[in-house]
Image (cartoon, rainbow, N blue to C red; front, side, top):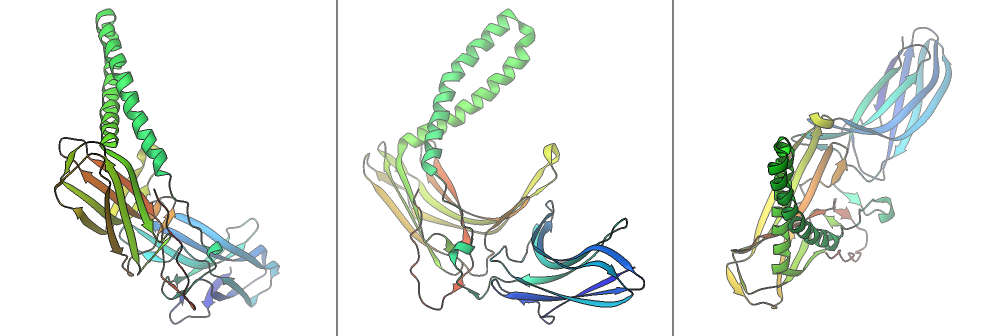
Length: 347
C-alpha cells in the first residue's frame, strides 16, 4: 500500500499571508505497482467545531496519472493564497487551512493525507480590491416600509380573526382549537407589527451612516444617527452597540440548533434622558475603534463570525425603536502609499 507525506516550504512556522505562494512537496512510497487514476494536490480549508463541518476546495492540480512502480516518488505543487477566509481558532468554531494529497485508486479505497498551515491576517499588503468580495449594504429603507405594512396587516386581520373565532364557537365548537391557534398567531403578529408601526411613527426619517466601508481592523469606525421626532417626546436613552459573535449551526431540519458566543461587545450611550420637540432634527455621532486583535468577518454554511451594529432608542410610554446592521470587517491592510478610504454606505 502507498504511504504519503507532505512537506511545505516553511516547515518551521507554517505561517503564510494572502498573495504569497505556498509550495508543497508530496512524497509517495509504494512497495508494489499502484494504479492510480489521478494523484491530486489540493488547497482547501474547513470550518469545524460545535457546528456542522464545512469543507471547501479552493484549487486542485493533478501531478500524476498512471501506474506508480515500487519506490519513492516526489512531486511538486504550488498555490497562490487567496484573501481569506483567514485561519481562526475560537469558542464554537475553528477555520483550518490545509494542503491535501489524494490518490484516486480504481476499485480500492482512495488514499489521502493532509498537512495544515496558518493563513494570517496580520501584515497583509493592500490587495486589488477586485480580489476581495465585499457584500452590498442592506436596503434598510425597504425594511422600514415592511415594518409599517406588518402593523397595518395586524390591525386589519386581527378583528377578522376574532370575528370568525366567535362565529366558530357558536356554530361549530369542534373547530375551536384550530381557530384558537390562528387567533393566537394573529394576535402576536398584530401586537409586534403594531408596536413596530407605532415606533416608526415616533422616530421618523431615520438615517444611519457608517464610514468607511468596508471596515478594517485597527482603524476607527465613524457612526452617525439622525432622525426627526414625530411627536413631542422624552428619550430615556439612545444606545449604539457593536458586537462580534460566533454563530454556528449544528444539525439539520427540525434537529437544527444554533449556538452563539459573544467575542466582543461595546455599548455606547449617545444621549442621556432629555426632552425633544416634534419636528426637531436630532443627530448623534460616535467614533468606534475597531480592535486589531479581533477576528475579521467570515460567513460560511453553519459557521460564521458576525459583526453587528445595533441602534436602540428607549422611548417612555411608546414602543422602543431599534435597528441592526451587519458589518463587513477586513484585516488591516499594509499600504505602500496612502490611499483615500471610500465613503461608507448610508441607511
